[in-house]
Amino acid sequence: MDSVDLNVLRTVLEWRRAGQRVVLYSVVQTWGTAPRAPGAMLALREDGVVIGSVSGGCVEDDLIARLHDGRIPTDGPPVQLITYGVTREEAARFGLPCGGTLRLTEERVGDPAWVAELLARCEAHEIVARSLDIASGEVLLQPADKTDVLAFDGQTLRAIYGPRWRLLLIGAGQLSRYVAEMARLLDFEVLICDPRSEFVYGWEEQHGRFVSGMPDEAVLNIQTDERTAIVALTHDPRLDDMALLTALDSPAFYVGALGSRVNSQKRRDNLAQLGLSQQAIDRLHGPIGLHIGSHSPAEIALSLMAEIVAIKNGVELKQKKPVREGA
Image 1: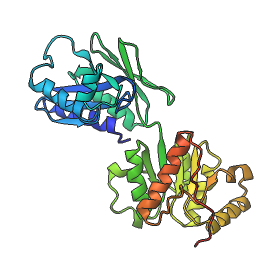
Image 2: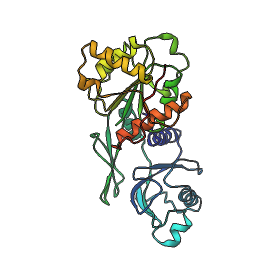
Image 3: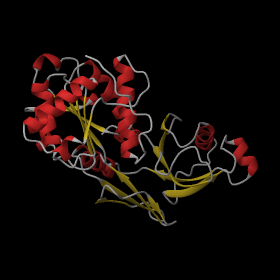
Image 4: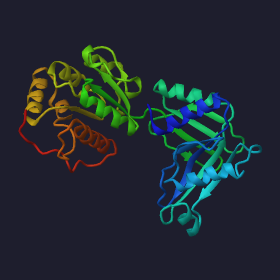
């Protein structure tokens, strides 16, 4: 999973291994309309270079100024708490919304071993809790659950990392590339299955992880759960329907397939003939996506990801594509 937070931690590891001093900031509490939610991270290198974000920009400027004017201690307690936006004047100065306040941990990163371990465990598809003791700066990594959320009691920060949402794409064509790019920006781990070797060229590892085998095998091999969305995008029923037969009987929270109203109905009829229950068939999203008048691959990808995110977030689909004829 290539989320913003994990990108920050990858950079922290790179900088520390190069011998550079790094301060890591994490949003731990917000009041009012804060620009970033708890868990947002920013890393500040000793020369003022930053990666990540904890606000709309003005707080970042002040953090850099803290480095240059010596307000960041180089010894003493490894972690301290700083707060922005307590007064109306500060909120205006730092560009915070009216009434917005955020509290950050300011953590000097010493031995980066915990960073390497956390990244490795996330790459192994584990969900990990990082507990930071404010008084000592000690970091403890523990297994976590998909339902866990960030917690801060003033003494310990417990933040959650790892691929809590996944998207399996059946097919590695042009549309899948757009979908994969958007899904990664939305913190989905992207998996791709396509037994057609002709379509694999040009995919970079960071765009998604390929799952070997046929589509139905891939659905089983990734241990599909309720955090998984599966979308068939090959337009080839020999591949798409193989995946759907298994996916629609799985706990996946979203199962969809590319196609017009006519082709989607043909697919449903075919799945019924293959023995799939009507209850399972009714779970199929097809045509996929919300109605935004999409035509190009990028617009279709946006429409699809909007629908997936809406269902993930428990939002009623009020802008579903209308039923229409098509090829």
